[in-house]
Image 1 (cartoon, rainbow, N blue to C red):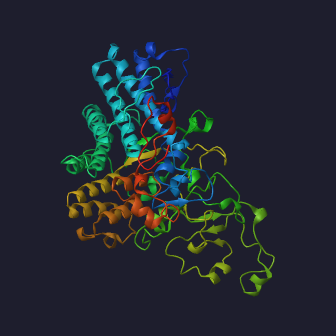
Image 2 (image 1 turned 90 degrees about the horizontal axis):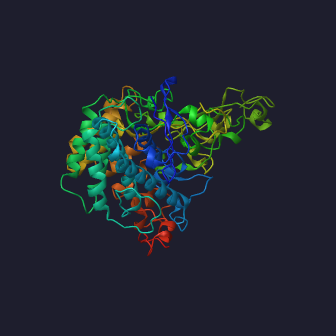
Image 3 (image 1 turned 135 degrees about the horizontal axis):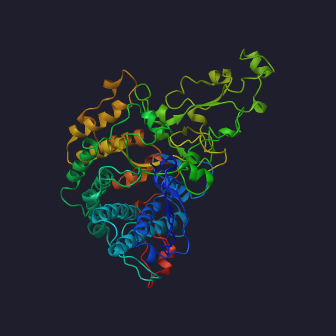
Length: 562
């Protein structure tokens, strides 16, 4: 059962849900004219308020803002032709406190925090619900508050900390050190969630104990790299990752490609995901959805024999993979490139199918004036890394379809990630998609445990975890060939492996800032961002409107100008 979300205003106006058994989904029903003060302390109001706390994930995870701030401007993705917000990749003056993505992410995360604070506060007068059920729901809310604060500190650094509900207008704000936010908010919230959440929930999409364990493990692993790390952070993170891997019913899918089968979303590998409901995104009730299908596509719809359709997607051309990304996979032993990227586009526009020219006929390629292919045949082919030597200029000229080799990649024409493609949208222009946005999955847990083990010097254990992932992605019969030894395990190798496994999934900027490698890797692999990136870019700027509306001002992060 997918958990559908409601979107409360800043004033915490309540929105109610009507229950229905239709397709086992919760159906939304707007309840107007009800105040939070009178509605939230009721059982129905409390349940709705808890559900509302989930909603603040949706404006970030799975939409352009989140992908821009987590994938773009790293070693894996650089400029595509279209779109604004290029400052996140160029690390130039456009990346500043007035940027809308910087501002709106800050706002939404604090709205989520305040919603959680309100639920916790208003629950104190709720007597009609059993303590067990109330504690379970509060554990969900504290899981979410911990996640929102975690996102705040890993993007903005030292930020405002409040564990009390804000009502009305406030013009004062504190700037609490990250170390204190970890100690006072993030870690205690997640520990409470672990202690009180069940292993699974009847409604798919709610927080669970293993999701809280994995999130706390990620928190501790990140803290282990900081100057305020606590002894045992990496070891405790390893234990928590082990719990997720070994103590529940999660299992790696046999085939990596099945992770991206849109009919197989609620599978055994998913630990926690942001839910999207097809009915809601198709009908416009949810204006967010998963929009990843828009941003990683090349401009196929202007090629000969092609036009835009629902199956191939609406190509917004935001993010182009770097040369480094294209170098990650050895396709003779590893299937994950082929299962992550699209290779063939089939002709769907008879009107623009090209014909063989006289020069083609003279070269023996075809019959002059005859169509090179028919509708349904291959129109465009991107062979991908390792195949350029085969596709010589002569072989390309002889092919009836268009072939793009690496020397022909541009900001419009480049290998297309297919993980988020959504052919179920109601029409070719529709922007929200129905895919869930996976935030935690078992493959990631193995690689993060490997990192925690590496932090402790256990390269043998790290190699074991990495090999689990590499063997799953291996070409049949090449399982032994892909395996590594303890001597192969370095942080750089592990980051490369995370690139192979998790490309385009929204982890990369967090991975590089966690491991203190963002600046060096962008300089080495990102041709646009490399010349400009500086040490201070490991944090985002504080939004200018936060500075302006705070009595006495609010400190900007070092390196950024107000």
